[in-house]
Each structure stands twice: as C-alpha cells, then as structure tokens.
View 1 (cartoon, rainbow, N blue to C red):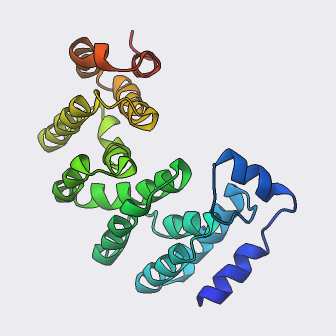
View 2: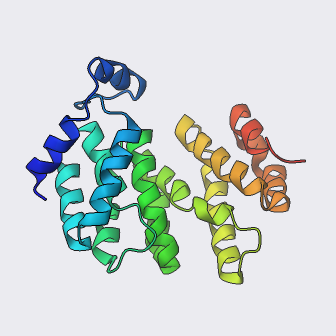
Length: 225
C-alpha cells in the first residue's frame, strides 16, 4: 500500500464539521481532518491484517511524517500489536517519534504501541530510562505511559517487580515537577498500580505525596481502600 492509498482511505472517513471541534479539544495547530477514532481503529486493524510487518513499519513512518493529527494516530495504531516479528525496526521507529510528542492523544497512542514492544522485550527499559532526564516534558511523561503494563500484574515475577520499583523511582524524581501533564502521569501510574499493589502505592504516597499537586495526590489514591 502506498502513502497515497492510505491517505485516500483516511480521507474517505472524514466527517464534515468534525475537524474544528477536534482541533479545539486536542489543542492542535497541525491539520486535523475530522475522523472518529473508531473509524481509524477499524481501518488500521485491516491494514495490520493484510500488510507484512516491513510494509507496516514503512507505512507508519510515512504517515507520521505527513504531520496530520489522524495520520499520526494511524501510524501508531499500525504498530499496536502484541506479536510483531521482527519488531526491532518498529521499536526504533516508535522511539524516534518520542522527541516529537506535543499532545496527549498522539503521545498516548504511540506509547500504546511502545508498550507492546517493551513488554515483548523488557530489556528495552534501559532505553526508556534515558527519557527520564530529557528536557522535553513529553519525553519524560512517555517513560511513565509506556511502562503502564507493569502496574497491572497481580502476581508479578521478580523481574517485573524490579521494573515496577524502578519506575516508582522515576516517579519519585518527578514529583517536584509541577507541570500538569507530569503530575497527571504520576497519578495515572499510581492509580492503576493501586488496583494491584496497594501497599506500594500507599508507601509512595506516604513518602512523596506531600510534594504532589493536590489533584494528582487525590487521583493517585482514588482506589486505595
């Protein structure tokens, strides 16, 4: 499939009058076409089913480079798949996108694709850790979003616990950063963790909660008993 074919397929899904509303909601200065997320899901699901992995990676790269809101979402969705072999090029491509993150929707979709590649090879956590000291706020936030799968295990293996504690260490460094998206990212990680590991969540809040913004501290402890 060529980039032109993909753009034509996406354009066919545009809903008149939707673009302006989406641009305001997502605070976009880039072009927004006005395509529902569910429609992009269905289209990219079909692409994943029919395109070989190298072609998917190439198309994802081309779609991302157009710098249209929905094409960047589609690029991420093309790579959001648990089994992707080989996946080295996909992982490298996702990493290359991180410094360009500038909005939560694009960043979250790309990180969802990255979560699959990170859980497929947890050793990649070493690369993710380098993001935590970036000057780019969205890169630092991505380190939390891409590691969310480690909040969800009820019976984590020792290696998973090591990663869980490692990310909590990053979050402890982040608490003094008062930027809303960083505070929201910490709260998101802790809130999800609290459903499976309330003791670690409570210990984190006891130690670091006073440094968090009140809304973030409240959200982090939302599901604690």
